[in-house]
Image 1 (cartoon, rainbow, N blue to C red):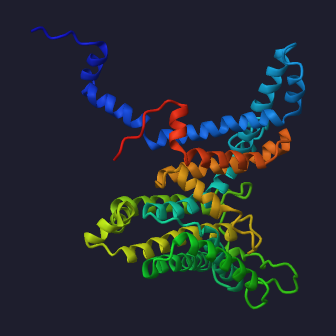
Image 2 (image 1 turned 135 degrees about the horizontal axis):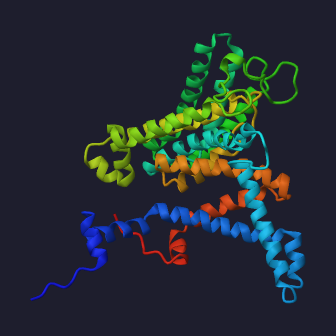
Image 3 (image 1 turned 90 degrees about the horizontal axis):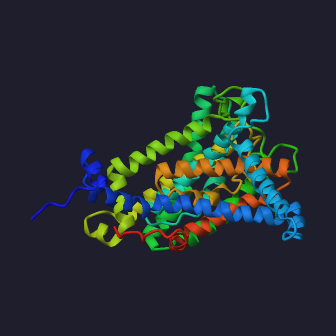
Length: 406
């Protein structure tokens, strides 16, 4: 019996040492994987956002009135509206090619990194809890408590920088860990649902911080009627990493270190194995000898410390003037989106945090130069969450194969 002639594709696969079946399997794994669905969800949200930009543009609406007579006017206005909006976002988030000074041209990128730092830290806190099948939506409360504790150390104590700054950071992380650990402990001891507990703890943290900001001996600025603390002392301020002309400070470096630590924790440590085992099946984990309740408590404490570090970033950052009730800046809830988009993987959360940092930095330029509401950026972010929550919809739109069961 004759052997059929080899096709060029088979020849190439054989020359590369990769079996054709394996090549097709890898390709199918990529196409049906979570990462591609996440990227397509972002692209789909940007497309819907483009439609909304065009629909709210006055010139586009005006030219649409005589679309059949002069379609070129409508298409030109459509292109100008959409391209102008996203080019403005690029100039505000990555590189401003309209400026001559190289330092000022790259300043938008440093602003993106500055905004991304606390988003990455918050995303790591939420994503780590996700890996243990816990829904930590108490990021706001953990940030408020940690920010208040770090702020108290930051302006009340007189210490040298080498002691003052690390102490403020550690105190903030410990406060966030203890606040997050409350939800984990209640989950472990009583079975209380972490969603309910963390929502309630958000309110408790908010009003506890409000009370502290009304007391002169705690956080209140003496003689002030506003609930705000004095500014941080210079010895407790996160230093700028690229000089005084940029706002990027050490907080982003801490976020990168946290990504590495969480990656090692999940993939190389015994605790990471227990976290993943409990997240996959707590009953099987308990049967194999893992203390599920203790794991819940430890996970929520580590998650709280990461979100606490995000709160520390906000308070001790070079652009912060003190502790206030809005120090979380919605990061506690945005972190949920970052964790979802990053699929609760440290490197994915890093990429998602950078993307949302670019949205925040570029949104202001969109509003200033193109007169587009910054709320539209929030709409795009919300659409990303919507499409991430419905992966079958994304796969159906782009005709992707169904995800294979693992």
